[in-house]
Amino acid sequence: MLLRPAAIHKYVARDKSRYAGVEAYRRGRIYALNADWVLRPGPRLLLAAEEICAVLDGARANIATKKQ
Image 1 (cartoon, rainbow, N blue to C red):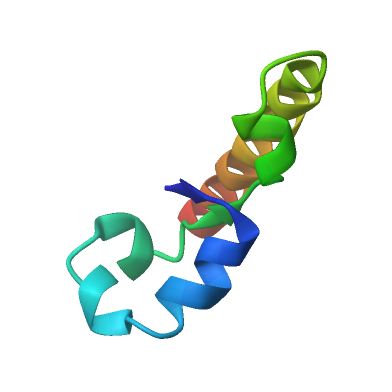
Image 2 (tube, rainbow, N blue to C red):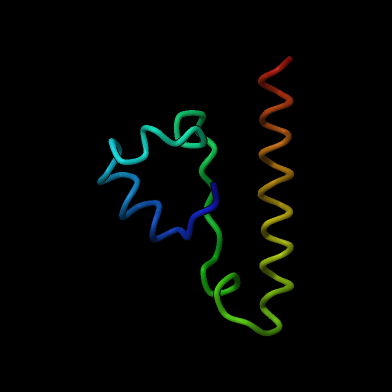
């Protein structure tokens, strides 16, 4: 699950029971992205793509480490 940073702090911390049924939350796989890059069309879209790739690479590395 990928959320904007403000959404993570505002909603997840406040409404933990709301996210308890979400597998990504239970597994600690909630990641923040820069909302300006993701939600606004234009050249920032490339920055958003790079950020998404970096987040996913980090998530894969964490999963691989936990399996070992």
